[in-house]
Length: 137
Image (cartoon, rainbow, N blue to C red; front, top):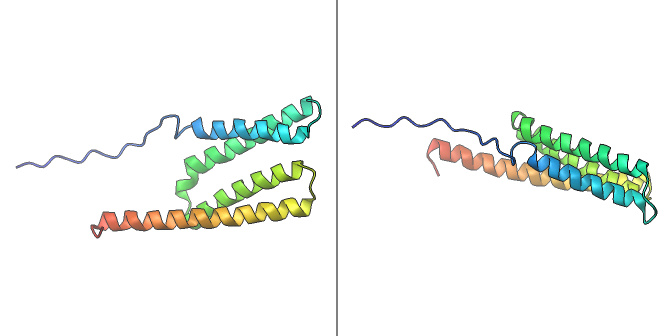
C-alpha cells in the first residue's frame, strides 16, 4: 500500500503573526505613555507625539522579535525580549517623575525576570520538540 507524502508545514501569516499583536501593543503603550506624561494636566502636542513615537518604537521592536527572533539562539532571544520589556517599563516609570536610578533599577528587575521566564519557556519547549522529533515522547 502506498503511503501518502507528508504535506510541508505551512506558517500561518494572519494578523496574529503579522502586525496585529505588535500594532495593538504599540497603540496601547502609546496611549498609556501619553496619559502618564500628562500627569493629570492638560493635553499637549508634545504628549501626543511622545505617545506616537514610543508606541511605534515598541511596535517595531515587538514585530522584529516576532519576525526574526526565531533565528537567534534561545539565550539571546530571551535576553532580547527581556531588554524590550525592561526598557518599556523603565521608560514608563521614568515618565512618572521618579529618579533615573529608580527607573533603571525597576527596568533591570523587569528585564531579569522576563529574560529568565522567556529562557525557561524556550528551553522547556525546545526540549519537548526535540524528544517528539526523535520519537522518545
